[in-house]
Length: 553
Image (cartoon, rainbow, N blue to C red):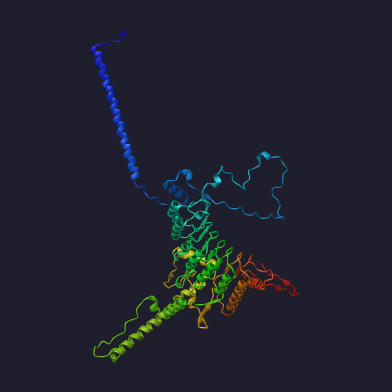
C-alpha cells in the first residue's frame, strides 16, 4: 500500500457516498436534458401544424411582394428584386446663340485625376444582370404606393408567382399597365392571370409578348367583364386557332367587347383563315379603333375579307333573325324588358259583357283619364323646363363615345371608379341640370342600321369605326389592293352622303412591304386617298402669284 493513503473503513464509506451523489447529479442532468428536448420537439411540431396568419397587403408593391415571397418559402437570395425602370435621358435643349454665357471658359487645367464618373451606365456585380427582377414605374418615386406600370423580362412566371401576383396586384390602386415579355407562360398561368386582371381597378393596358402557348387561350383575356383598353400580343406564334378565339371575344351576333379599342397581333402566324375569322368578329363590333396584323401570312383572300368588312356586307340568317328580335323589342319596350302587358279591364257587372260599360262608369273613367293626362302634360312641361331629363338612346351614346380613342379611355377610367353624375339643387331650391360628362361607352349595334335589299339579301354598311389598320409585311397582291381600294372609296362616298361624326372610317392604312409592283395603280390611288383622310393633313394653298404653298404644320 502506498504511503499517505488512508484505507480506513470510514474513508471507504465516504468515497462510496460521494460516488452515489455524483451519479445522482448526472442522472438528474440527463433527465432535465431529455425533458427539454421533448419540449422543443413538441413546440416544433406545433409550429409545423400551426397555420400562419394571412398577410394583408398594404398597396406598397415592393414590401408586399418581398413578404409574400418570403412566406412562400423563397430564400432571400432567390426573391426577385423590385427596381425602378430606367428611363432614357431627355434631349437637352439647343443652346441659344444670342444668350451670353454667364460662366466664361477658364484656362484649361489638367484635372484628369478628378474627372467625374460617367452617368450613362451603372456597374453591377458579376451575373447580377441575369438575376430576375421586376421593373416598375411610379408617379412619384418618393411614394411607394404610386406604382403605375409593372415590367417583367426574361424569367419564368410559375404558379407560385402567379399566386403572389393574385394577392398584391389588386391592391395597387394606380396600376394601369402590365408588360410581360418572354416569361414562359402556360395555359394555366395565363388563365389565372386573366382572372386577376378584372380585379385591378385601373388596369387598362396589357402587353404579353414572346410567350408562345400551344393551347392559344388568348381569348380569355378579352372576356365581357374585361376592362382592358389596349392589348398587345406580338411574337406569340398565334395561328388561325388563336385568331378564331379572338374573333369570338371581339363580337358575336349577341355579344360584343365594349372596352377594347386597340389590338396588336403583329409578328404571328395568322393566315387567310385567321384573317377571315377576325373580320367576322368585327362585323358586329363598333368599339375597336386600331388593329394591327402586320408581319403575318395574309394573302389576297384575307385582304378581300377586310375589304368586304370595310365597305358593306350581307347579313347571315342568324343576323337577320337577331335583327328582327331587336326591331320587335325596340317597337315594344315591354317585351324587351320582360314585362307582361297590362291586364284588360273587365266590367264591374257580371251580367254586362266586358265590352259594354255603363254611362256613369264611362264618365268617371273619362274624367280620371282627363285628370291623369293633364298631370302628365304638366309634369312633362316641368321636366322640359328643368333642362331635359329624357334618356338618350344607348346606341347614340355609343356613337358619341367612339368619336375619339382618348375620350373613350377617359370615359372608361371614370366609369370604372364608380363615379355617377346626379342632378343637384341650388341654394334657392331649384333643380340644376345634370353636369355634363362623357357618356358611358355603349356598343353601337349595326343590326339596327338602315339596310338595303339586293337580290333577296339584306346588306348593311360595313365597319367604319376602325380608324387605323396595319396590314404591312404580309403577302397581299394586286387583287387584295383593288378590294381595299373599293372599300376606301365606298367609305368616302358614304361619309359625303350621310356624314356621321362617330363613324369617320379609315384614317390610317399601312400596306407597305407587301409583294406589290412599284407601278401599281391601285396602291397609288390608295395612297392618294388616305393622304386626304389624314387628320393632320392640310391642303396646299395657292399664292396670288399662282405658286403652290404648303400649309402643313
